[in-house]
Amino acid sequence: MLVLGIESSCDETGVALYDLKAGLIAHHLHTQMAMHAEYGGVVPELASRDHIRRVIPLTEACLAEVGKTLADVDAIAYTQGPGLGGALLVGASVANALAFGLNIPVIGVHHLEGHLLSPLLAEPRPDFPFIALLVSGGHTQLMAVRGIGQYEVLGETLDDAAGEAFDKTAKLLGLPYPGGPLLSKLAEEGDPARFSLPRPMLHSDNLDMSFSGLKTAVLTLSKQVEAEHGEIDEPTRKDICRAFQEAIVEVLVSKSLKALKQTGMKKLVVAGGVGANKQLRAALDQAALRRKLQVYYPPLALCTDNGAMIAFAGAMRLQYATAPGSYSIKPRWDLS
Ligand code: KG4
Ligand code: ZN
Image (cartoon, rainbow, N blue to C red; front, side):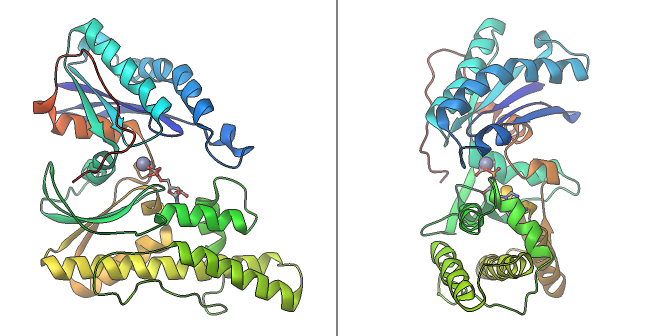
């Protein structure tokens, strides 16, 4: 059973082939980052147009890589939502048109379910149940995952997502788009002891989080440093980045441990773009080691948006696949 997966919810066009027996056999990705960089963020109309340009060549590249043709594909999975309406429509239209032409079933996948299940594409593969820390640009949630489709939100951010906090903070520090990964790189060279920022909701008695205040705290700190020492130099900027990262990582680690303790589960799965963050990974690994817990991550290349996670989630949910026909997208869509 070969599933073609198409991801087009935001600024990455991802296409992949997942085979139920052989696993992930091909995945290709085109990121629009450079195109959106000059605007300082994703421009939805440009995103949609670029998905149109890329999706077919990426599909052809996947098939060619493994010596297959469209005739070998048994089902097509696409990101149905949440995401940018126009961008989602491209993947949905192509998936449904191809499935219609090939007379094969098609399935709309929840983008977050894709992220959530992506650590299952790595070895060793975690068994259910587990806690998932989903940290992307649009979402930050802790979920109890008891099986495919059995997701319970235990806590979530009340305002900015963790990735959004990285990106917005990077922007106010004058870093070019996309700021998150760059901020994290600078933070690695920063001094963790020089500045200290608040840890929002660290001691709240629930699993909710809040990150928008952190960005404001960085702004206040930057202004303070500027007033005292003049323009912020490179080492100071690195120290501020480090202080921000220390705060956000401590909150994410603490809330994840709390979720594990609360449910009695022993496995944590980390998914979404912020899951690529080295300091977060190191802190989680260290905390897990001390408590005899296991932490699982997707392969680094599959942390951010990609077609592989959509092909995989589609393959896991094949029983919900339908004959192609009329279709809808869901720009806003809760997972549980
Ligand atoms: O999962 P993703 O590709 O897209 C969404 O579905 O949102 O996540 C993208 C987010 C961005 O906010 C980006 O800044 C963040 O993940 N990100 C990182 C790192 N790599 C990507 N944040 C912190 N450290 C990183 N290394
Ligand atoms: Zn995503």
